[in-house]
Image 1 (cartoon, one colour):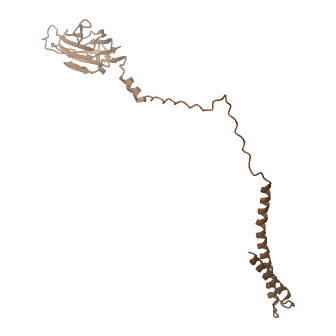
Image 2 (cartoon, rainbow, N blue to C red):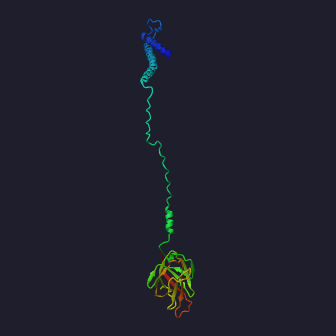
Image 3 (cartoon, rainbow, N blue to C red):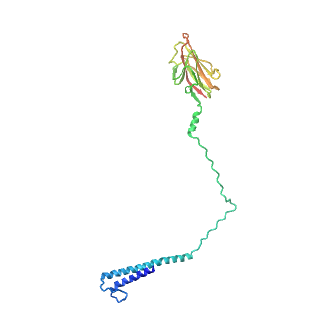
Length: 265
């Protein structure tokens, strides 16, 4: 780098002198340029100035980092060589040093889904149910579900049995219920063909055949309101036979309605 600086400064000074004196100065190391024009003098002067400033700039750049490094070294010599680390705070002997381990959080049990609740509710026996909503477990004879009219009163739900001289019988599962209420009668819109014909209806425990109430008899225009006890009864059998009129042959069929028959717990 020193040789480059010397070259820049030397050539700069040479071109500057040549430009200034125009080659006419009696200096041995300055070349003689007798025919130098004015613009050529200016060019030499400018080139000499540029070379001189370039050399000075190189010297400045070379000297500045050294000065800066010296200043930093001087500053660091006055700074403390090491930072004092604070001593650890002593742990009180009366305090436990170990952090207690947290106990395991109990895993929450599964919450039953709404569908389970609905299933349980649906599976529970209702407090009351109409007989028409139960399917018979045994049928001997005719049985239909329909609305009837008896003594001028319309009943929206009724079990209608066909009764003949041979006993018809229908059995239902009534376990869990304590009684049944109903209105018994012959539909007025379907009277028997025989005058004074009637029907007998029996309510028995299917398990042992014991009557639950006395046999009920009904005829056209005469209904019977009944409450049949069902405590301890699993299977209820309702049977019926027709009672022909004085002119009947005993081969007729009479329909009897069990209107609004409702099982209660």
